Image 1 (cartoon, rainbow, N blue to C red):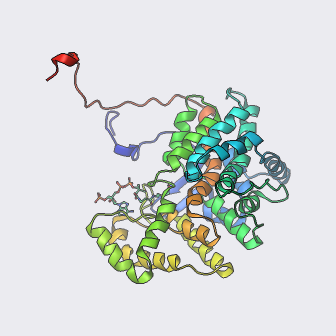
Image 2: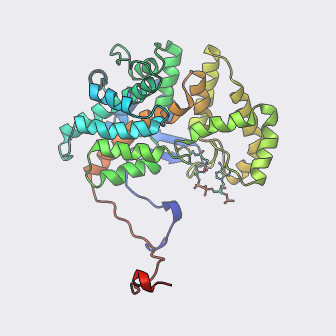
Image 3: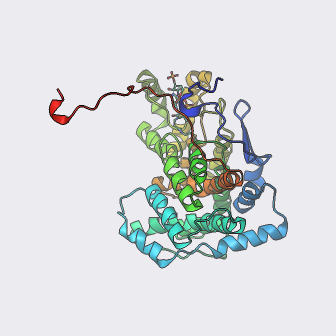
Length: 379
Ligand code: CMC
């Protein structure tokens, strides 16, 4: 590639050197610091995976216990943060509330200087611990309910489930939530991570960095797709309608949400694990109609889209899992953000650890210099 060659969407253009995660898009492999994601989803916990992403190695017992305790101590919000949520419109999207509130959180824990490793680590702990509370607090406040104080006797996933639903999740549900957090924790140079690294490269503090990443994640081509998948499955209505709906979508050049990926040209390995998890959840809850619709849609789409390397991605089954856990649709993307905060922070640490300001070039397609014509002389 010549340096002046323009690649829309920066496809295949390396934007950083990174040691955090790796994807083999032809063989459906995703590694976090060298460990396959499906192994971590089965064997690890979100806390352990977050440490792995942030520090580069699996923690020893004491390191993990201390990290876990430090996160539990930092979950509660300043009462003014709760008041802020009361001032937001209850009809607003939780991703907007999250983007605004992460930035606001930085006003309470201001660490403008990012050259101090101890201060940076403290920010990582604070942000990772607080993001679930931000999401759950807005959710309760918009429903007119009192926010629930975080419970420090529960782990990250258990406390998240509790704060969102008001009920302590069963061990099986907690495990599913934990696995979902692990599966979404990191995914190399996607749009939100790139946004995080770009903002981080200006030496903005990590609250601003994470706020920017949340904004990028919210779009329907990125994390927002999980919500749109459920909308699509509801419109299709039942497995029996899937073929006709799909044929019409192909004829009208519509996009099938939850399908396709810039890097994976086979089924996303996270979708495979999520499908497995979905089946586990249905043993505790009931099998929703949307799951059968999704299976049929995948079957009818495969011969047409599969041939073009377009397969289900992580968002195809995640919403069905969350729906079965009783989580509202517009909280799906915030759950993605809660998990991905670990990856974003790992990238931020990596970026500031060897920083150079992002300042790419453009290919100018506009006018050459021209003469200004005053308003009364314009035709
Ligand atoms: N349904 C139908 N056709 C598709 C789809 C789809 N979901 N995805 C890609 N295509 C077609 C697209 O129409 C285009 O066809 P043509 O060459 O004939 O114009 C071709 O495949 C290339 O598509 P593209 O959008 O230029 O490719 P990309 O690498 O920019 O796309 C993507 C990646 C994720 C934006 C895209 O696949 C998409 O829009 N998918 C639906 C939204 C979605 O599920 N997003 C979640 C992504 S995974 C989780 C995350 O990282 O957030």
